[in-house]
Length: 143
Image (tube, rainbow, N blue to C red; front, top):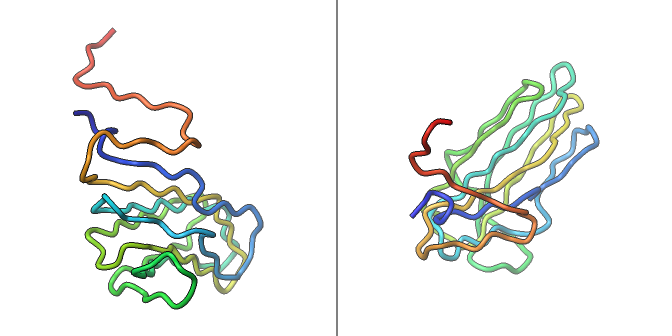
C-alpha cells in the first residue's frame, strides 16, 4: 500500500480571491465517514498592515444546516502574507466538520483551502473528480 491509497484530497474547499475582513466558511461540510483525520491547509494571500487570519473548526452529527459546535483547543492564526496555516483534526467526535476563517482588523486574502482526509478505514480510497491524477513512488531509484 502506498500513502495515497489511505487519503482523499478535496481541492478548493474554500476558494476566495477578494481581500476582506469578513468571516468565511465552506459551502459544504467535510464528511469524515471512513476517515480518522482531516488536515485543513489554508493558503494565505496578501495580509494588509495589521490584518489577522484565524482558522477554527466546528462539528455536527448531521449534514443538515443549523448550529454547529466549535471544537476547543484548535484556534490558530497568522498575520503573515503568502504563508499557509495547517490545522489537523484527529478522531473528531461528530461526523461533519466545517472550517471557519475569521479575517479581522485589515484586509486579508485567502487564496484557497485544501482538505486532506487521512487514516482511511478502507483502502484504496477513490479521489474526487477534481483530482486529475495522482501517483506514488515507493523507494524510487535515482536516474
